[in-house]
Amino acid sequence: MSEKPELNWDQLDVLTEEVRSGSGPGTVDWDAAKSHTRRFNAAFIEEFRRTGGKVPGELGEVDILLLTATGAKSGELRTVPVGFHRIDDRLIILASMGGADKNPPWFYNVVANPEVTIELGEEPVRARAKVTEGDDRDYLFSKVCERMAVFADYQERTDRLIPVIELEPLEGAGA
Image (cartoon, rainbow, N blue to C red; front, side):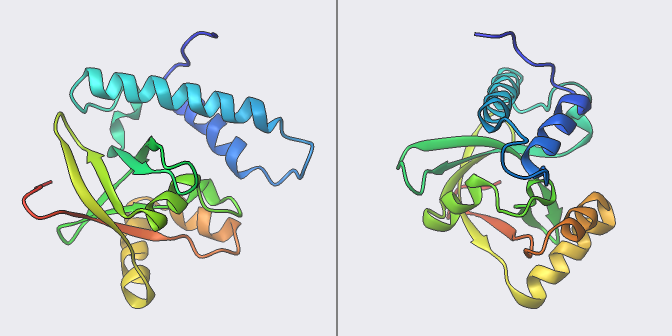
């Protein structure tokens, strides 16, 4: 197996470009891109868990959690790092995929199986993923964009409405 990727902004930028490439079929080696993404995510998850929920390296400037959901098709547990935002005491994630024309795979998993596990620190927390709609979605998206304008850029790149998901801790789960 190839060596572990560095956990830095340059590597994250490469992943973002890979997933949102508008170059068209045949111009992106999707198998290589998926492999790179999987290696990056695996290294990130390993470091996040090893340090008790600390985001590694220079990526520590962004709030990131680990989201574990049951695969919509496979039924297997899938864990991915996802940026999050706290807005009005609500825990919010966006299915932006860097402004790609499709939603990230994890989005379909949380829609099909909304009971998820989130890791913000050392203790996993059970939660329910709820896709927000209408004015509530627009309000939350605008608040995220005030903090991180890149999400407005992502929305400009795609015709799809970027989903905004609230993660609500289940009774007694705390987050």
